[in-house]
Image 1 (cartoon, rainbow, N blue to C red):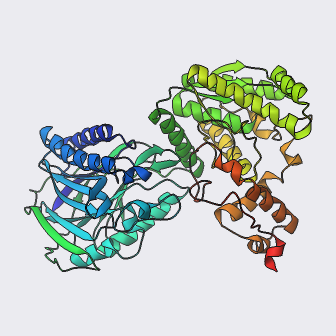
Image 2: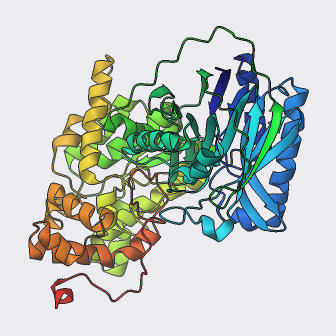
Image 3: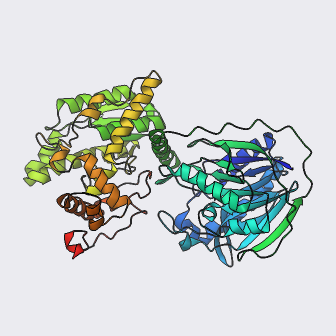
Length: 576
């Protein structure tokens, strides 16, 4: 049985940074060569970053990507990595169109190219807008083994290149991926790869990107599964990693070049001789799975850190209200960036309670961030008196004075402003445009209120287990949430109980349940009418909210695209 040492380079590229991403590939290819690997695979479109969105439509960018991959091949040979078989994702373009492609590099040249066949066009993906599907299936003979290459969505759809590789005959499949994080997706991936490995009749080595790109987070979680569904190796989530594994492969002596399932099959022999028998490395221990809260926290930290760093910011600023949302965002920011890069500002008004002020100060003390107090009472009074504001207008001007204060500090010191609103508030429009909705990034935008509390308790528990002070004040977790824009105000004055509200929102937003479905789910008709009306009327607010890390199956934004001007309402009359 031929032996082969493979390396999966789980790395963090930046969209558009062709030079920096090429350097990243060179660095990790060198590590792979030093590990003794004969094959190294990099993620989907690693050379351009992913997703490139409408950059794919720019001929100049596509040409630059094609040039960059050819130059990369030469660089790998120049640094002594020419003997490696390297699979690198990039953006390709020819007379037929633009493709999401993989280059197979050896001895200073691109020896084969594969174009992604199945193009996702759902959720956050719009690949039919950009790419043409590939129909050519190159199979590489390397050290006596036959290797096929596929890209991400190619394993998520039935049929296609995996089935074709199974019919043609291969000994190993390399699957390169830019698969975004969603809660519990890692278990789905492993089961999927196992099914596809059985279909191909060969092990699948699955390498995924890691890092944040705008609202998406890629969690890595690269893995190798054999043809019988056994997990051979797994990389950790949310960190760069080189997963190195020795494989003993059943070489079937495959020779078929007959078209399979509509694919043009070609075979290229790079090295038909098996490697001399060698002592394999100890099998790497598969990375332990993370708990749900640890996984979500890792995604939120990664998304915030990379958004800040990749966009050239050195620090962030946020309002500290003493409430649960700002305390959790402060803790996330400190974990992501370090306390010295985080600035918290308390902005009390005449309605701010003593416990809110003290809890805000305690958050700063526990996390170690920079802390300042900027009272807004006089600013608010100026607006109220001059414009004769009362009621909701007076409440909102407080939030807007806070928003202006944060943006002024951002302009003065170069901080990125963090919005602290959560998914539940965003869903029902419980926020003030140009007030608490200001900012450049919203770390918990896709986190329901009940999960915010759960994450806070988990983060404090983790700190205690490490012998550290919990970063989130207990009072911020346990006290009734309030915007404190009028005397004695609490969120329950305006909204249903959060536990109940989040259950309705999960079914309506994530599950696309209509009025009749929600009735069947057991919710009260009046509650359904009230919540759905709030959600439908708030679409214009969501369009103006900052970007934030996606952790759910259906985040607000590209996952859920509804018209702002929209007369349709889910209510009892719709049943008639």
